Amino acid sequence: MGRGRAKAKQTRVARELKYSSPSTDLTALQRELGGQASTYTAPAVKDDDEDDIASRWIDDDDADDGWVASR
Image 1: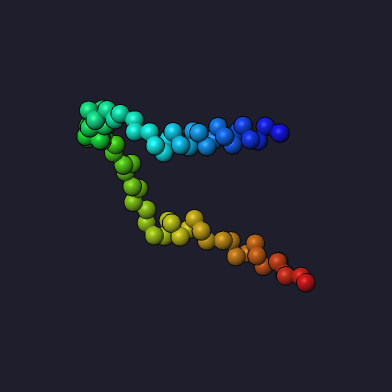
Image 2: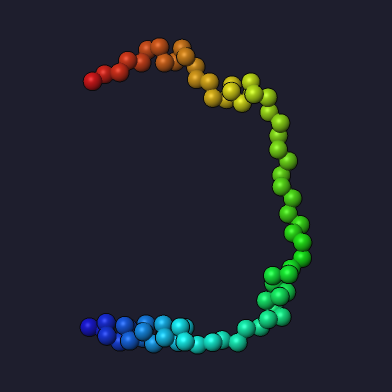
């Protein structure tokens, strides 16, 4: 029942956003975009051997011997 009022309010807010021209604080924008250099450092990458990586993913073949697909 209150749909008309809600739609009218949404339309009013949308028009205000579309046609308003808010004042922009250019000095604050320059400060934000200019900013200081980042102090982030990426974590060190652990140098794994290929065998070590592969051993993580190798399945135990003996465990699969008893498995039979049933239909």
